[in-house]
Length: 219
Image (tube, rainbow, N blue to C red):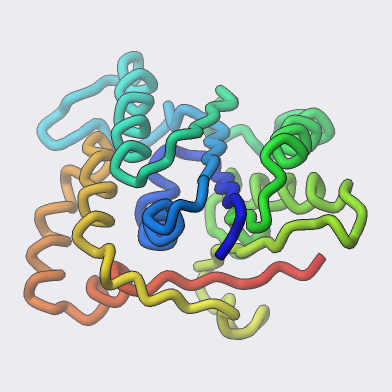
C-alpha cells in the first residue's frame, strides 16, 4: 500500500481514461491522492454535444468538470497550476520543475503517476512528464518516489518494452465511466457510444476500461 500518491497531468480529463481505476483503487483503500493539473484545458477541441461552451466559457466549465471528477474519484487535494493550455513545453522549465518539486517535498509521495516523456503523443503530455522527472531527480537517490508513467504512442512498446504494471481495474469500471462522463464538454460526443460498446463487450473498449498500464520510469 502506498503512503501517498501524487498524480501530475497537464489537462482536465487526463486522469479519466488511463488512470481513473488506479486512482479509485488507492482512494478506496484510504490512501491520500494529490492531483496536480497544470492547465485549465482551455484549448480543448470540443465544446460539448450539443454545445455547452464557447472558447471564452470553456475554462470555467472545465474547472467545474474536474472538480466533479475529483469528487467521484475521492481526490480531496486538487492543485491547479493555471498554466496556459498547449504551451507547457514553452514555459520556464526551471520554474515549473521548482513548483513541482515544492509539491513533492510537501506531500512526500511514495508514488507519482504522470506521462512517459516522448511516448505520450501530445506535447503537453511529454513536457509534463519530463518536468516531473527532473523535479524528482532533485531529490537524493534514496529519497525518490517511484514513477509510474503512461505511454500510448504507436509502437512505444517496441522501444521501451512492455508495461511493467498492468492493473485490473474491472471493480471500478462503472465509476471510471462516470469520471469520464463528468468531463462532458470533451466526452459527451463519445460517452454514449462507449457505454454501448462496453455493455456489448467490445474488446477494445472493454480492455481500455478495465485495464490500466504503466511503465516504471528509471531514475
